[in-house]
Each structure stands twice: as C-alpha cells, then as structure tokens.
Length: 246
Ligand code: BGC
Image (cartoon, rainbow, N blue to C red; front, side, top):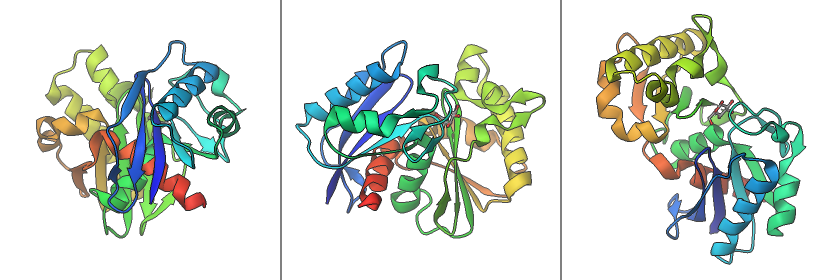
C-alpha cells in the first residue's frame, strides 16, 4: 500500500509516495524551499505544490516542527507565530483536496525508526532525538509512542537545551565536534536521569556524521545509535501515521 508523506522543515518541504510494506520512498522525493517567512498560507501552498508534482490523490501524512494535537498546531518555536492555535490539518486538507494527518516531526521520524530503522523490535523505553535547527523528541515504551514530548526544551544549565545542543547551536557558535559532543552528552545525561531509556536513537541530518561525535560521548548507560533512515524518516513516518488513521 502507498500513502503520501510530506516533511515540513525549516529549510525544505519534501515529499514522496511511501511504500508502507518496505518503509521506503516509492518514488524519488520532490522538494521545494521553505518560504520565509514560513507563514501557514505560504507553507500550505508549498505542500500543495509537492503533492501536485506527483499528481497524488489519496490520504496524506505531514509533519510539523512543533506540538500538534488533533490537527491543531500548538507551538511554534522555530516557525512563524501564525501557526499557533491553527487548525493546520484542515487548511492542508482544503489545499490538497484530501484528508491530511498532521503530526510532530520527531514523532514521525521516531515512528519510522521503530518500524523500519534503528528501533526495530526494541522493547522498553526508546527515545529518539532529532538534532537539527531545534531538538525534537519521540518517546516510546514497548513500541508505543507518547506523542508530543518536547524534550528539546528541557532546561540545561539555565538554558533551553536546544539552544545549546542542537546542530544549529554548533554552527552558530562554530563549536568543535568535541565541544558540541560534550554538550550533547550533558543533555543525554539529563534525559537519561529523567527517563532511563534502554536506547537513544539520534536523528537529524547530523546522524550521517555520527562517527564524528557519538564515539566522543561517554558515561551514558543507554545504548546510543544513529538513526537508520536519516533524511527520509519524517516522510515515511508521516505516511505511516496517515495510514494508521484509516
Ligand atoms: C520543537 C519540536 C520539534 C523540534 C524539531 C523544537 O523546537 O519544539 O516540536 O520536534 O524543534 O523540529
């Protein structure tokens, strides 16, 4: 079965039909640059363009980089404030002419990793953390998601953790891998103290460079592995969430 997945991110809005049996894209993905400012109207239109590129009709899953409850976007840490309290799923459905299931981006990535990637078959508490512009989290217990956890905004040494340990912080402050890994280690220790997971899955674009920083992280009891699906996890997870709605 195929369902369409769209990943709404800070730099790009990308999508493709997803083959749900294998958990991979069924076609080469199509991307449009995220408009700035990323107002709901502008972003919704981009999602429409991505869907139209494939001539897709049928259910669609989409990610959003913030809290989403019943299709309404509740937070807007790194996007336009116009998303606050918006029935974004309805707006998207009207634009694409099909039902749209909207969920948090890290939750989507986590769902895909648990089914087809680094978390496959893992019991107990598994925490996926996406390190990018912000820090996203997806918490699973025996494979079941606790949606909309916002562990990226835990306070760490008096700061919003994502402001210190995201890859954006690494770039903005021109941190070395060692320095940044030290911050990530402090952050993981804090999350571990609160949740005692068996496994951390580290996602986001930087997971491709895990060899540069994961070996530098010490003193964490949980196993730490890079995400396996990398860039496509959000698209795959969004499509899976839409299929689960049927
Ligand atoms: C948001 C999360 C999101 C993460 C990654 C954070 O700033 O609060 O909801 O998952 O960024 O995009």
